[in-house]
Image (cartoon, rainbow, N blue to C red; front, side, top):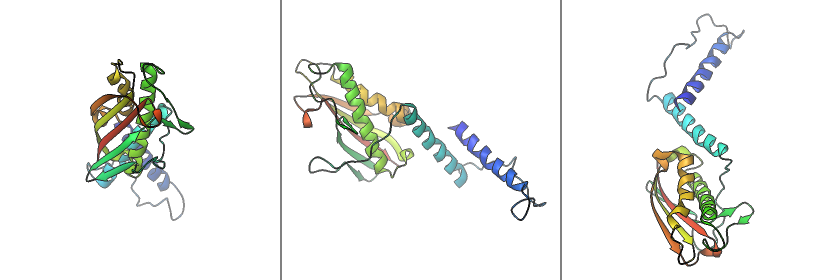
Length: 210
């Protein structure tokens, strides 16, 4: 983040120096002093803006590096809303492994899918959770202060005991995108006899926002 702030500040100063060299009323002013050595005051509006710019860029860069494009909230399939904001908390409704071309991973872990495939389903659920959170904070992921709680449900055969490992697919994705400080969370992982639409995994979350 510090590198991004420094780079942005350098671009800002370079733009001012370029303006000083221009002819006419917009440049070439003998009394103009370029801010080559001026320090941006800590906690100033410019300092805060630069830090917010750097953090947002960092999160977006992580998403781009992972090849992830966050979805926008779709129409719920029943009588509920995708998320609820109350105070400084966002409660995200359970997300299933929904991709742009439809529902994926329909079946049971331990029968139709391996543990690793279950993790892929959980990862897709987490991508949808981040999409809901992005919508909840008006598109600015930097406003997510902390992922407080993740609850994962795994549609599995009765003797499947690696439910917690399946939900690691969601937890890993969230921390990969948001970083440990914001992304690390408390968690529950629960085995189920069935889930909506017959999917293998469903994940919900609670987040603190700024």
